Image (cartoon, rainbow, N blue to C red; front, side, top):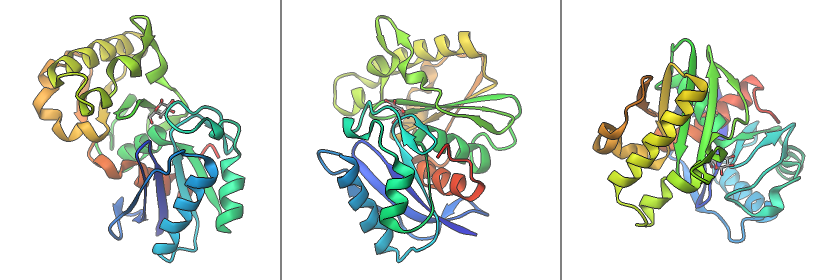
Length: 248
Ligand code: BGC
């Protein structure tokens, strides 16, 4: 079975058809820089362009970097504020003329890693964190997703955890990778103290270099890099659409 997945990020909108038996992309993904300003209308047109490029007409799953309840986007920390209150499920399915499932980007990555990646067959509690523009989180228990956890917004040292330790701090050259990893470890230990996961999955673009900084991590729980890397959002979006697991 194939379903189309789209991942809306702070810098790029990416999409491809996904094989849901293997959890792999059927064709090379298409990436369009996220329109600026990243309003719902502008991003919708970017999605239309990607979907049309692949000649796709079936159902699609779409990730959004914010809380999504019943298809409605409730927060927008790293995307245009116009998304708050936007009924993405209805808006996108009206424009695309196809069924659309909408869910949080980190939740999609968590589902993908639980189904096809690092957290496959893992029992107990898994927390996936994505380190990119912000910090996203997915909380899974026995493979089931508890949506919209937003652990990147935990208050830590007087600021949000994602202001303290997002991957973008390294990308922008604001922090050396070792200093950043030390900060990440502090955040991981704090999350561990509150949630006691059995496994942390470390995601986001910066997880490519996991081996170069993972010696800074001292959690009691195992910690593994995400396997699906930059495809996790797309694969998870398609998977959510296939099982109706979108919170939209
Ligand atoms: C948003 C989350 C999102 C994360 C990663 C955070 O700022 O609040 O919903 O998952 O960034 O994009």
